[in-house]
Length: 153
Length: 152
Image (cartoon, rainbow over all chains, first blue to last red; front, side, top):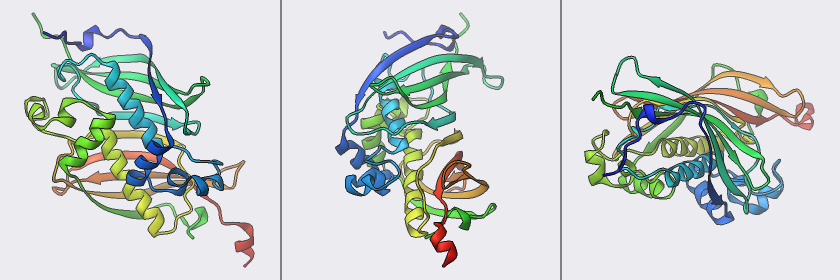
């Protein structure tokens, strides 16, 4: 039986570094052709003449790669603890993400708040930084996640 | 070309519609958000969502596609985006849903240092039952009209 992580098990102020995602030109173009077809994301030649000076990943692709690193980092409990996410705040895309970059995640738990309306769950707030191989923060945001609360024994 | 100066506060952009399929939900989630309620229809039935739902990041990607198509259609001088102040996923997005998105220009200001304008947009995504599935407040960067064109 897999251990379930409840809201109460998550420590305020907990900091973690995890993940490794190698960004390729093929994947940048593939994502952008489907979801963000602007020349600086889909066309290496046209991107050279853009304000970015070369091909860059869609900001939404950066977020998607972040989500993949979160999923790979989590112990698979069959979806027992996490109940999805209501959203995020203060997302900033600070630096371009380019082919060849290697991304990782730095996160810090900033609050765990039991729900007023639904006593079986609560909201976790995590300050997230997505970092490249030079240690530059390429994106940051505050993520929300809904977790189950430990049942009264 | 529609430049920053051509974008008026209060303007509403109808971004069009997007048909959501199970195949696309699973393909996106298989790559970027492999949780059972996004990737496995059977496991999703047992989950707290009661069936397969799209990753919230997938919803945002679909919204971006609608915005990118609008940028192309309206020839907007988009040069990217610095960020999103607030995003809320309010209701599950499921296979067979048809999403509609609408953006209201809430504020616009010119950059002090560069020839761009920052446009604050409030975007609402609704499904075919008119339920709001996503609300987003973000900023887009648009090029200013080149001075040569002003003189023309």
